[in-house]
Image 1 (cartoon, helix red, strand yellow):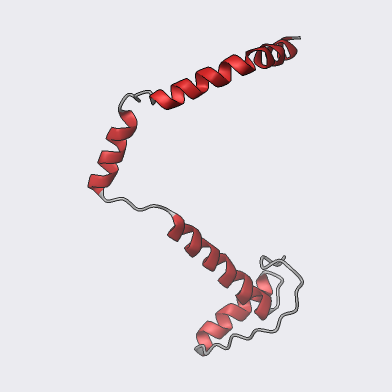
Image 2 (image 1 turned 180 degrees about the vertical axis):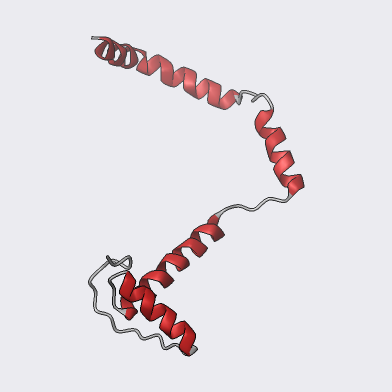
Length: 107
């Protein structure tokens, strides 16, 4: 099973120098997984690359920032007057649509 996906033309090369121990370990693992060495190395490298990129996309907070965030989340929210008015106006114009939708759910 290939993780790297599409069947586009492969025209890029990546050359590696390994110790004989590393090379033997990779070859053995490739055989055990039913892959050729190239597929094994590419799939393993892509899996690790994706994991690193996903990890990098997470927000990292200091202990102080994490505490401040938790405090802000726990505080009661204050209504935003403009949003309250917008929802009030939208509610009036959609009240009949909403009651029809609720009626459909009940029946």
